[in-house]
Amino acid sequence: MAKIDSIIERLFRESASEMVFESGAGVRVSGAQGVVEVVKQPLSTSQIIAAFAEIAPEDLRPLFPTEGATEFPYAAARGMVNVRFEKTNGAVRAVVSCEPTSASDQTSIRGSLPPPPPLRSPRSPSGGSSRGRSAPPNAGATARMKQLLDIMLQRGASDLHLSSEQKPMLRLDGDMAEIDGFAKLEPDQLKEMIWSICPSKNRDQWEEHRDTDFAHETTTARFRVNIFEDRRGICAVLRQIPNQIRTAEAMGLSQHILDLAFLPKGLVLVTGPTGSGKSTTLAALIDYINRHREDHIITIEDPIEFVHPNKKCLVNQREVGVNTKSFKQALRAALREDPDIVLVGELRDLETMAIAIETAETGHLVLGTLHTNTAPSTVDRIIDQFPPDRQGQIRMMLSESLKAVISQTLCKKIGGGRVAAQEVLICTSSVANLIREAKTFQIPSVMQTGRGQGMVTLNDALFELVKKKLVAPQDAYQKAVVKVELRAMLERAGFKLGEAAGSAA
Image (cartoon, rainbow, N blue to C red; front, side, top):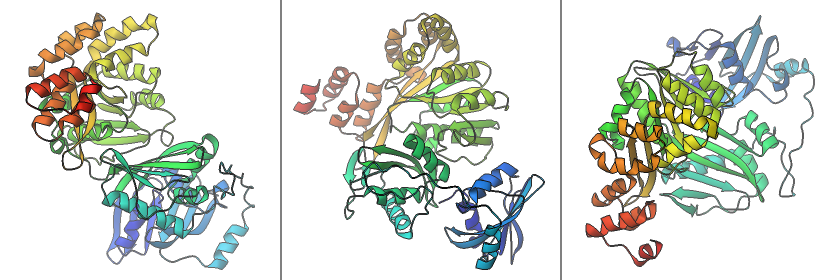
C-alpha cells in the first residue's frame, strides 16, 4: 500500500466527492458536510510530487509531473479514484475524486507523452523466468500478502519470514515456527507478493544491491521490511511495529530511567542484540518526553518505525534514504534545526558516533542505539571505534557527555510472550572518572554498589524476573553473560537448574 493511501482513505470515510492537495496548504476534502481539513500541516511541492509519483502509472513516471495537467486512475485500498495533477510555475495541485476518468480521456492524455524507456530485465537467481520490476502485482499476490500479515498480527508474532522455496515462518516468543496450510513459496510468486507492498524506489534499490529496507503501513500496524536475496532467490523479513506505542509506564521502566527523559543534555544509549526491543524502549522514552516536556524532538531512523504525533513537543521524523542521505548528514544538519532532543536510530559508524557525542556536549539530549550485550562493554565499544591517537580525547568527551546505558535482552515469559531484562548503568562521577582514566574494567564493581543510584546489573535484572515468576530459571540462565554468578544467586534462593545448565556453566 502506498503511503498516500492512508490519506486517500479519508475520502471514502468522509463520503466526500474530492480531496485536494496544494503547495503550501494542508489537505482538504469536499462533501456533503462542506470543506473539511484532514491534514492541517502545510505540504511542500516536493512532498506532494513524491507522494503522487509513487502511485502514478509506470509509463507516466519518467516525466512526472509534466507542466500542465495529468490525469490517471488509481486503485486505492478502499476503491478506484481518479487523480488530476496540475503543475504550474513550480507549484502543484492534485485533486483526487471518486469518479474515474474515461478511457478516451486517458488515451488523449497519454498520447501526448513519449513512449516509456525499455525496462531492464531483473536477474532470476533461480534460473526461471522473472516478472519485470515495474509490472504491477496481481490481485492474488496482494491477497496472499495481506493474509500472511493478518495471520502474523492474529498470532502476535514479532517477525514474518518469507523465503524462496520455503514455507512462510513466524517468530513467536523468540522461536521460529512454520505457518500451517501454506506451501513453499516459489521465487517468482514470492517476488510478486513482496512487490505488492514495496515502493518503486526500493524495487530499484533491490535490483541494484540485492537488499533494501522500508516501512509498510496498514490500518492496524506498521512493519519494518528488509528484502534480500539468498541462494534460492528473493526473501523478506517483516517486523511488526504496533501503531500504538507502549508507554513507559506500561513497560514498567524504573523511575531512574524515566528521570533520564528530563536531562537537558547528554548521551543516553539503549543497547542489545538485534530483536531485543531497543526500538520499543526508545519509542517509550520519546513518547514520555513528548508528554512531559515542551521541546523540539528530531528523530533520524532507517526506516521510520514508531510514528510520534505532536503532543506537548514538536516532533520531526526523518528517514534515511528518503528525507536525508545518511545518519551522519542528518545528525550534522540537526544542529542547525534547533532541536532539544535528537534520536539517532543507530550509531553505525565512527563519524556518526563522533557527531553524536559532540551534539550531546553542546546542549542537546541525544538518544541512540548500539549492538552491544552489556552496559560496561558499550563504553569500550565506543572508545575502540576511534584510532589510538584520538582515544584519549574521546574518553574525556565521553566521560562528560555519557549519562546512561540501558542494555537489554528479551526473555521468554512464563505463559507466553516475552519480557525485557534491563541492565542499567548510570554515569555518576565515579563512572565518569573510570572512563576518563581508562579503568572501565572496574565499572561492573561500581554497578554492584550503585543500586541506590538506579544501577542494575544484568544478573540482578534476570534474578528479579525469576523471583517475580515472570521467567523460568533455566531461561534466565541462558540469557546471562556471567553465568556462574547467576547460577549461584539462583541456587542460594532455592531455584534449581537442570543438568544442561550445569554442563553449560
